[in-house]
Amino acid sequence: METVVQPEERDQSSESSAAPVTEQVGSGQAGSGEAPPRRWGRLREHVVLSLPGCWGALVLACLSFTPSLLPRGGFLQGLICGITAAIGYGAGVVAAWAWRAFADRQPRRPRAAAWRTLAIVGGVLLAVFFVLGQYWQARIRDLMGVTDYSLPLVIASPWVAVVVFGLLLWVGRGLRRLYRRTAGLLDRWVGHRAARAVGWVVVVAATWLLVSGVLLQGAATVANQAFSVRNTETEEGAHQPTSALRSGGPGSLVDWTTLGRQGRNFTGLGPTAVQIQKLTHAPAMEPVRAYAGLDSAPDAESRAALAVSDLQRAGGFARKNLLVVTTTGSGWVDPAMVDSFEYLTHGDSATVSMQYSYLPSWISYLVDQSKAREAGRSLFDAVYDKWSSLSPHVRPRLFVAGESLGSFGGETAFSGEYDLRNRTAGTLFVGPPNFNTLFREFSDHRASDSPEIQPVYKGGRTVRFSNDPAVPAPPTSRPWEGTRVLYLMHPSDPIVWWSPNLVFHEPDWIAEPAGSDVLDRMVWIPFVTFWQVTADLPFSTGVPGGHGHTYTSEYVDGWNAILRPAGVTSQQLADLRAVISTGQ
Image (cartoon, rainbow, N blue to C red; front, side, top):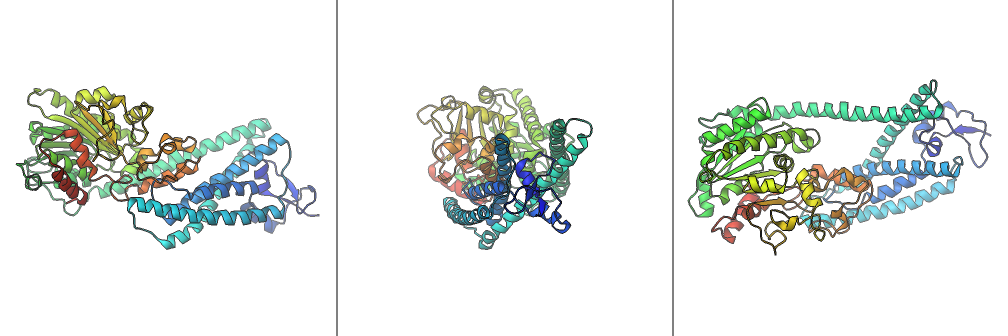
């Protein structure tokens, strides 16, 4: 009888074994180990699958249709399905190998009936979960008011999943072949077991260094060069200021051309005194805005010093309210954040910020965290050094703000709750990444009866959290006196909730009752939930305001809670929300 080498049966017996396993075709016993016909050998190496692996792929592929934080399009669902199916396949292969190792038995060729069972059960389960997935996605879209839906992409999603699964399986088998060759070479000089162990270490280490060192850094370098070109552009509507109260304007210490794309937006746009007065029906001043771009000075400390010098030149320290903003990666300052602050202070305000990277936040999130930390600390220290030298009777109230990665940078200037309370008049951090040091400290040490999506820290004496700042932040029964520190975060914001711990650990925000814009059907699944929330990250701002990482009119109520401006009516707040949400 003919005997063949089954490559995937080697996978089932041991992902780490370099020795081939021979099986007889049909129901006979192991044969002599003859090689398969040459025309089939290479093909079988690529297409033969493991039955336990396929069951694992099926289970995780079905679970990938469960809901996450944001609505998913067809392409994204296919991507997640392919990734999680590949993980399930690997888990199935490893589980089968471990079971056989404990049972001390060799692999057996699966019967044809076993494959037919997989095909029937798999087809039914995939169809059921595909339909359920579409139902869950429709409910999420309804929760958020999302109307975008592409039927062709939904139809294409299974094919996307197959392609992604195939690519990842191909990569995995390539690494396995590399391991076998490495172990085979080492086997000439060391014992067989040592060669296998060292072979795995070498392959894993080399893969990690290649991905993190060469590929990731190479991609970051290319992206940095591409976005540095974009930094030289000026968006339509942003014009060089004619007011001396703005960086880049007459008499400014910062040249307009060095501000960068986002810096020119910051100083070239914004409400005027006339616009503020029209909305508030009260006398208003022209706000001061100071900014330094990456090209304005060679390093973070000198950029901070330049921005503060220009702030002083423009009379920023003579205003009643002074706001220090740490930007996101590309130097972006959310107009809703600063505009709301300026309207509620009747323009009697000054805002200072600076750029620390060309890269947008989602890339800076991966490679520029240290720059955000340095920029946040350098800018606040430079402002505080000048501010603290002024008489307490004349110096402005000092506020701090940051959104997303900007909140991470803004936090680094402070050691904790007491430091925030003692050195600022108020702080607003919005959409904080899960790795923020102070955010994690406050959340992890919250009151035991408060949920992670809205924690209560130290009775809310200084720091409070809000999902909807239009209503008082809990605990409403306790006074909130002195400096107010407010964190705004949507229950559906993946920037806030993403963490590597999602791979193996169920977070409290999933175990607890769901937030107002999160589907109650969301559950934690090892590996699956991590990839689902990871896939949500790039699309976190692609949903309407009030959801995901899109914060607009919430700034009005957030600043109103912190500033506590006198004489502001509910109608004025409603009018201001409308202005901020439309960006007019």
